Image (cartoon, rainbow, N blue to C red; front, side, top):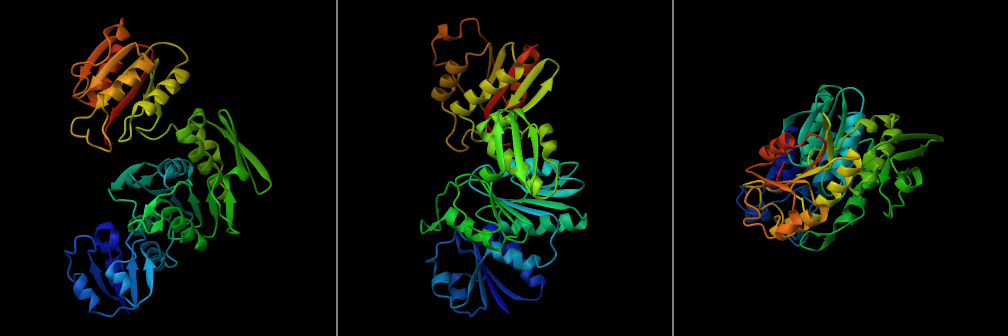
Length: 405
């Protein structure tokens, strides 16, 4: 049997190599740079039994339009390669928003040893040690699943643009969508299609999914302030978390808790989940509450939300704002313009301000706005944090530096 595997950039090499190891004849083509051997023209002259293509590839690409062989997705190829060699339980998570938080929160309460595949890479639990830096393309499921099998552990996988369907449970974290495949396909439609072969499915609110194996979150879980109550299988359980009051965490934590119940796991452990580094995670050092919201998507709105949450957590005391751009990381996404930084400062009115990196030179806000405010400068996020901790004795510190973590 001969396979043509397309897209060597986004996992095609790993998938093609896995098929080769099982004894199949495989060609792998770089469809974006056309720098592979064979190239597109050569592959067009050959016959194949299967074509393996990523869901985001233009359906009018010559190797799809002019090949007579049936086409399967990278996700489907992963399921084919895993066969029955699947860790248990195995949970697959996809969606435009909230999948990293959902995956990490669920992994934090899974019992015993296991593996988390997320945007952080392949992470071994319970030690939470990152053993490999990989992407969340479906191909990355293969080495992560093998790692889980070696330790006879559980496996939680965050995947882009759908799931393989090989696991015990699949979670769709959001209903937002966007065009893919040169604008000719819809991302959400593709994700929903990938759920059809899953044993159990859990979907976020507002998603139209009529699969008989699906559970809609709004039918299973409800929140009241800091409490989430989950009803499944005739029993009701609950957990409490201050993170439930944050929009960025509410649905992911509800999904993680409900998924745990569906797997027969007590969700109460989520009460100890403090968040993900750089995503509204909270630490306490002495009398200081430190809220870390420094990430590649930091902006004025997320900074203001972080400050509100920090003040709620601290209860009283002053607030120190560490804000700016990590040198070398400022070009991530859309940057963090001085005008946005100034807007955040105006809204928050911190007692102490630590400006990180080459921002606000000179400051563009009126001097009277910061009357009585202590202003510091630091070259990096880590140095800014040190300055804030040394300058503060109580209250809260908000880290709002735009950076890759």
